[in-house]
Length: 267
Image (cartoon, rainbow, N blue to C red; front, side):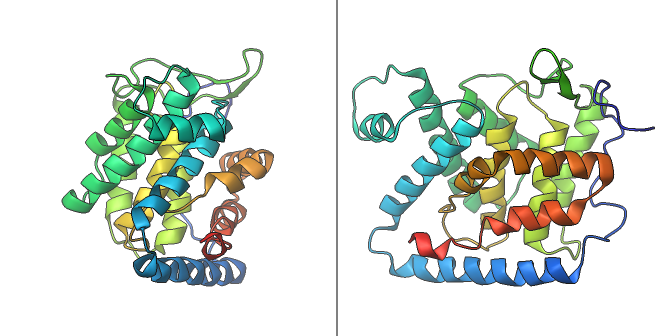
């Protein structure tokens, strides 16, 4: 069945992609560069005088920019004052950004203990971000601006659950695909499964960082990826669409890897 933006995408292909045509020389070159950047970042972590301070600084910036992508906007001033103050925070946008930081740090610590990415972990990220007791969505949703439907994710129920089960199995299994490539595949798939009524983008971007920690490419959740996505937001969404409508995985994966190129220079 041909993809239609106005119908539930129940035919969203499972992971991994049927073919691996995306494994090109350009991709392998980018993988080598990205792995070198992550290795340098990981190598600097033990010599940082106060790694927790760095975690707080970068995670707050990641939380802020990831939230801006979803049009949740707060200022650095409000954010840092709220983080260091014991008084009640009144600004709802600042509260939501701080919940992103809480979700990333709390679930990172739990993942280190359990060693497992599972549905409960994913749901708890969403619940912390949105401050809700909701679970996987039970109603159909549409992505758009009220006038135009851009995308309709798989219908709720067994269809949605099967897609999520496949996502979790793919994330957990060693199937011979480079972890950085898998991160890009997983991010696309999670956003197109769209398991929650809201907060999918932020939950998915937290999962990117957690996955790199899960695969031991990171010791601490000190990646600041959303700044790049925010800067190239139109490209981010364009490449999403090209994977869906044209199967163009290579460009998408390389885009996701390009976020990693300048990481060590930020420390």
